[in-house]
Amino acid sequence: MNTNKIIARLGLLSLAVISVSAIAAEPVNMEAAKKLAETCQACHGADGNATAPIYPRLAGQYADYLARALHEYRDGGRVNPIMGVYAENLTDQDIKNLAAYFSAMPGKLDDLYGRMQGE
Image (tube, rainbow, N blue to C red; front, side, top):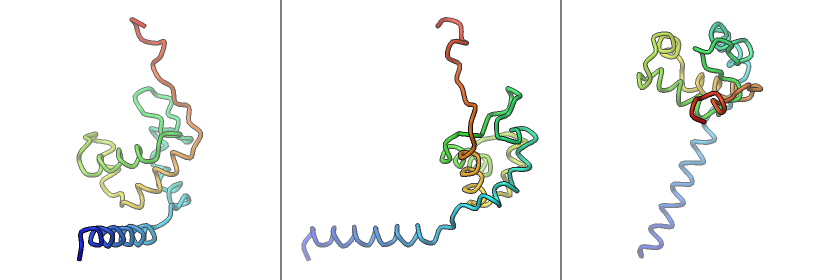
């Protein structure tokens, strides 16, 4: 068998594996996320827009960023005593749900433009 046929077959096999994985993944469950997010409200606000500057605003953030942060808190890549305790029991599906939930909320994100000396 020539190299091109081998590469083509491997490519088709890869696409099949990816397709099956995508089909097997559970869809986002916003109701489950809303229930999980009740714990988050104490620090991050009922609408995901924390008012205390020590807590990040979650509403409107990118879902992949939020998911990565939660995975890192859960797996020890990010260390925070509060978030570590909360995230340690989250499943991958919980994280996916929470990330989608907060990213879908209207955010009040801003940056430090014009607030820093030397600008």
